[in-house]
Amino acid sequence: MKHRIVVLGAGYAGAIAAGRLAKRLHRDDVEITLVNGEPEFVERVRLHQLATGQDLPSRPLRDVYAGTGVKLRSAWVTAVDADRRTVHLTGEHGAESPGHDTPGHDSLGYDTLSYDTLVYALGSTAGALGVPGVAEHAHGVAGKQDALRLRARLGALEPGGTVLVVGGGLTGIEAATEIAEARPDLDVALAARGGVGDWLSDKARRHLRTVFDRLGITVHERADITRVDAHRVVTGEGREIPAELTVWTAGFAVHPIAAATTLEVSDTGRIVVDATMRSVSHLDVYAVGDAALAEGPGGRPLRMSCATATPMAWQAADALAARLTGRKVPENPIGYAAQCISLGRRDAIFQKVTHDDEVTSTVVTGRAGARIKELICAGAAWSVSHPTMMLPSRRHRLATTAEPAAPRLATR
Image (cartoon, rainbow, N blue to C red):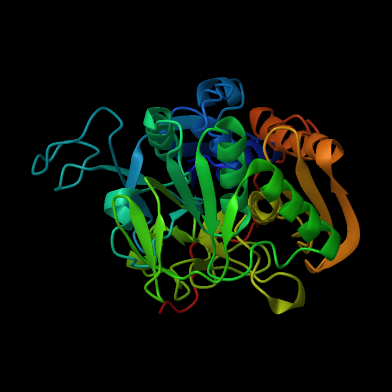
């Protein structure tokens, strides 16, 4: 029987892992199934562009994986049973009616998918941190549907309307500058719990301030937002900031599915993995992207970003393929090279960093920075759209002496 590999999630990490596995392994030996809720690949790093009225290229997954042997399942993951090696799905052909036992469905009516090896790449969504009013009144840019809802809301604002972006990280900065550039008739502000861009070099911070001034963005630093209302937010000090539209980008949270399993997870619900992206509690599970807690340079966890999702996918796919085919598992420590922040369509910051993510004095800004940022985003999308182009054509056969997936370490 073929070795069944199931990949959950077709974001950058999952999509690249599935394609790389298809290139590494012989299709006579393995069956690779990619499960994703959306039928197309979504460029998450461009969702702030989608939210401001720009149209993004459509990349149907059926086209991406045509001829690769990867099977696609357009469905939503509702649960993972890591001990029975099954995944529960719904929504592939419309919601199933609970209580009907049919072949391939469990007693609750959900479709079940069995695996020999699981690659978990369900990513993350916006984290509200339990702040009252976020769910009712705020918008986000963590997913395609979020961005489309924000797009409609922005389009409904009259000139002079107030927009507040909450969160001073990369997503917040990109969202605020994109909105301010696309809608100069709006009053755009940015609120951050700490300093905005305070991790950047002096040159990069100065440029960021210059762009904020040029675009007319008001910055509220050290503003801890404790409540979101329909037309304002309230800080921990009781100060009110007007906001007809609040955009919440203050942190990310992983889907709770992993935490509900017997997989070992961190206190934030991320799956704890070793240097090959393999679960430390279940040897037949790999986790990549935002859903994985992997040790990076200096013993610090790799940050949740597209920049780390891609090498994590490479690492997991290469390690899994090596183990299945009886070859030496490659050792490729993951480090950093740069941080890129778009500041609208004609400006950006390209901040060079060290391998362990410390900023250097090398910074490219303005139109040159924007060109570099665009090349990086386009390259990431190309690597997903052409999942087997950058590897040798030879596929390896599974070895009879390959390390089995069945044994486990102790679960929590």
